[in-house]
Length: 53
Image (cartoon, rainbow, N blue to C red; front, side):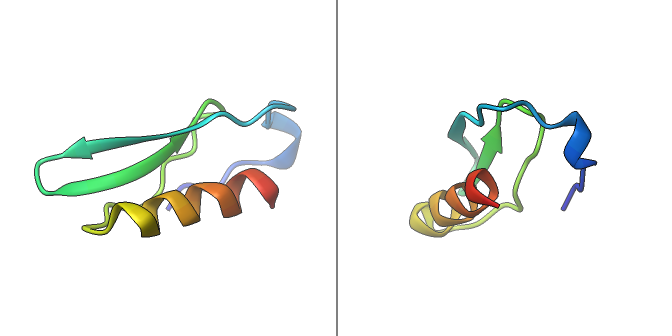
């Protein structure tokens, strides 16, 4: 998982999900990308956690 300095984060995080074959992952407008998951719900949850934290 990528980690970015908090100074580089944009004030607004727009989370989307994308699919790659049988996997789904969350990604953010700041450049963060979550790990690939088979469960879309898990990818969405990780995206929400990123946006809050």
